Length: 265
Ligand SMILES: [Zn+2]
Image 1: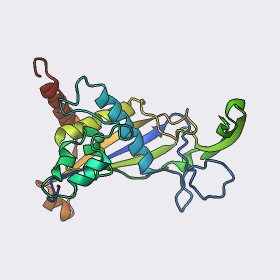
Image 2 (image 1 turned 90 degrees about the horizontal axis):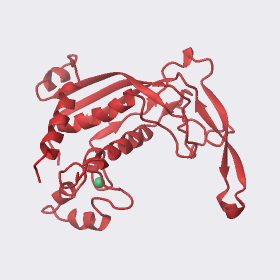
Image 3 (image 1 turned 135 degrees about the vertical axis):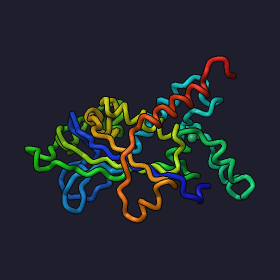
Image 4 (image 1 turned 135 degrees about the horizontal axis):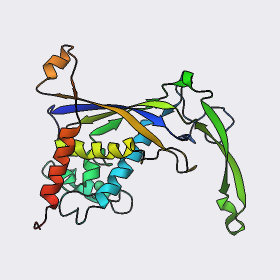
């Protein structure tokens, strides 16, 4: 669907944690002796997996899209990927069998799946793992906390079980990098308005298991765009100038006004 290069936008920002952060992995094989260790790179440096960042950004984007009245008729909506996907597995399998109907997978997809992807369609936004930047400024990097859960096997007895989990302490800074390929200006504007919530401190990151911590703010958001106008210069090593997000936020605003404007059906 996107055989030609149209544009690529790199968004970079610093995430400054205001509370502790727990984005562990129960699949980690690290012998830390804790039930839920923080993810760490080969050098021991904690990082937030790109998939966790994507999950949080997508969830907030979906909430915003679902708050739009009659959004589906107006082409601004988010399906429930699990309970009621915009394109079901059966549909996708039939459509993808034939080059004549292939495009229906895109046509029927919701705004969120078009941007972030679905099992049938690659997303156009990717999130890098975000590494801790300021280990040397922190008195300690991680701490072990106690949690109490309910042992589901015991059912009605509601016996509580103790577990512990590792957190990165507050004040930690992570370098966030997001790559957006071939987004329309208004789609990038939608993504930027979600990131604006994060700048305001309203996007929590973290595991469902531990709840609670994970609040931080994005700072110093930078935007670089490579398109056909500067592709050659970029490929030959020129610096790509930074752009302001305003143009894209405005494009999103205009798109919303056009599609949701009063008096339209
Ligand atoms: Zn969808």
